[in-house]
Structure formats: structure tokens, C-alpha cells
Length: 301
Figure 1 (cartoon, rainbow, N blue to C red):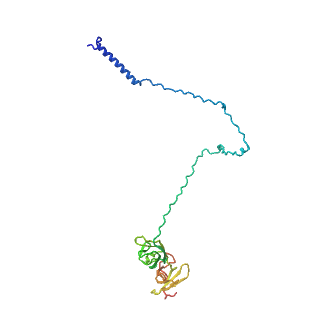
Figure 2 (cartoon, helix red, strand yellow):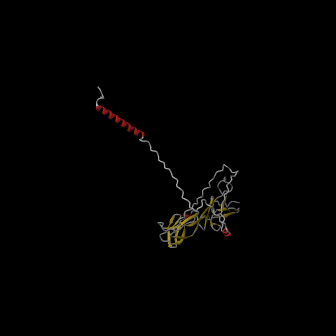
Figure 3 (cartoon, rainbow, N blue to C red):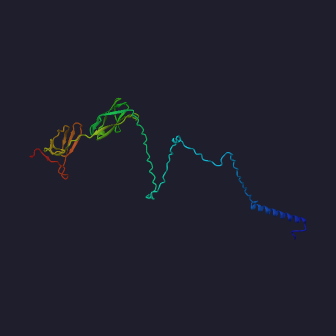
């Protein structure tokens, strides 16, 4: 079978049209691949020299320096020009090349303490106590508190213990302090306050001092066969003299002999009503039996 008939004019036209279309397609693809037409050359501009303005006819071609002569009056107006001419530093030949810069220590911060809050003024005033000092181990005693602005609703408080209070007047209160509060030496804090704490005073100190004690040692006893009306032999500390005492005798005007036994002598302070016990003192050593030397009055010395 013949595909192409060269004698047929229609067949020739088809062949020509196909060839033209192929050429156009190839040209278009080449344009896309090659970037179209060649790049345009950049245009350059040339600068033209601007002619200098013409010089005036009377002007000189060159500038000449004008020299002015100075008069004596002008010299008085001249002032020296201060100048600081720094001399270039010359490196010290003995300088340590390994030395390095040490920064100065940081400045010390000054801490300003805060301003303390002022203490509020108590609504009640406590000025003094009567008595202000007592002996320890004594009995109950009456305490009076003096001040101002007291009311029947306030109480006397000693070392945190509220005591029954007597309202005498706005400047005076009274109470009874139990012996248990002053059993030991020291100080006791006293203040005045009501139940809700809105009325209160500053504190005052009650001094509790140690009571006087007898300065004796119990060194012997002289007794009858039934030890009736015995005699105790006492020796004052630091002295060699002996003192014989019996029940009822008073030493130093205040210590009364209350009882005498082989183990101890009991003295009572007649002023403070305080009992002092003096145990028998063994002078010959701790290995000796605990028994004082006893001699009856019927024996021959």
C-alpha cells in the first residue's frame, strides 16, 4: 500500500504545512531555551567639563599675602596661648613585661539600716513597786504598784501569772504575791494589763535576793544520857574558836537554835522566818563513820 502520492496536490500541501509547523516549533523551543534575544549593552554617559567662570578684568591672577606692621598698642593686647605639650612616654627598661592590670576592688556597699518603728506609748503608766526587792524563800507578801490611769478592770501580772488585784485609786494597785513565786533568787517581771490586752503598761522588775545564811559548821554535840537539853558545838567558818549552843539560843541577833540532833542543827531566821539546816561536818576524812563525838555531862572529862 502506498502512503504518499507525489502526484496528488493535496498531499503536497499537507507535507509543506507539516514542515512549516515543525520549523516554527523548533524555533520557539530554541527561543525559550536560549533566553530570547541577546542582552542589551549598558549605556555609558560621558561627563563634560564645566568651563570655569571668567576672572574679572581687575583681579590679580595670584593671591598675595598682606603684611601688617604691629604697633606698641597692639603688643599689649597679645595674650599667651596655653598649651599642654605631652612628652612621649619612654618605656622603662626595668619594667616587668609579665605584669598585668589588676582592676581595683569594687566599692563597698554602704548598708543603711532601716528606720526602726517607734514603740507606741502604753495607755497605762507604771512608775514603781513597793517593795521593789524581797528575800527568796520568804512567806507571802503584799505588793503595791504605783502609776497612773489605772482602772478597776486591770490586773497585776508577775512573771506571766495574773494575781488578784485590789483597785485602790487610778494611781495605785495592790496584790498579794505567793511565796512560790519568790522561792528562788532572781528577777520577776511585773506589769499591769486588762483582760483583752488593750490596756497595758511597761514592765518593772521585782528583785529577789538570796537570804542571809548562818556562817557556821556543826562539829560536835554534848548530850546527857537521854539527850535532853543537848549542847551543839559550832565553829564559825574561817575561825578556830568553838561555840557551844543550846535550843533557844540566838546567834548574831537573828538565828535562833530550833533543834539539835546527831546529824544536824536547825537555825531559824527570826526576821525572815526561814529555816537553815547545818549538817554535821566530818573533819577527820571522808572514810570516817558519820557520827559526831558525843559526851554526856555525867562523864568525867
